[in-house]
Image 1 (cartoon, rainbow, N blue to C red):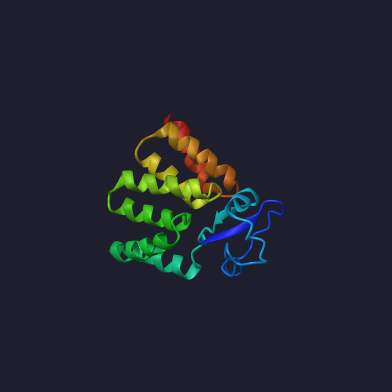
Image 2 (tube, helix red, strand yellow):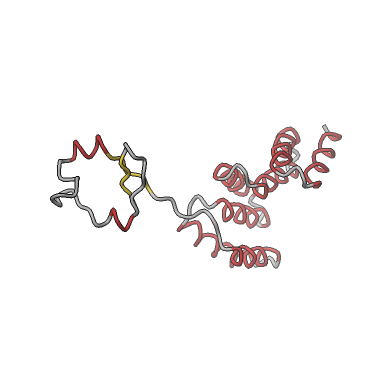
Length: 168
């Protein structure tokens, strides 16, 4: 879906309202031609929501805990098909890949989740834990330091950091 945004106002026209306009419709301000349109307006893709309903998250987490990985994967793939930048679904699919022993895929998913939401402590910890488990100590330390900044109240991150500092 695209919305039309007038450059001078930076105001987004809703998709419903934008859908009522056409380039050839007289009197709508768009009839001056494509050159005017290109100079005055730009098109912005509407991003799918990047949140998953908490009930869905709980259900998927339960499936993962029960090792019902195929069912969890199906639900997560469905979410990601509609919302490719959904960091929570990426993180959970990374957990599935981790349980399947697909560490490279899990790492890629965790990195995508962190990229799509750099403030997600869950995705940050998922990536840090994977790096720790793969004995990539320096990278794990850097990632846990980021996690600690995101959630300084969580003692688990500090404990992991202390343990990693002792190992290095």
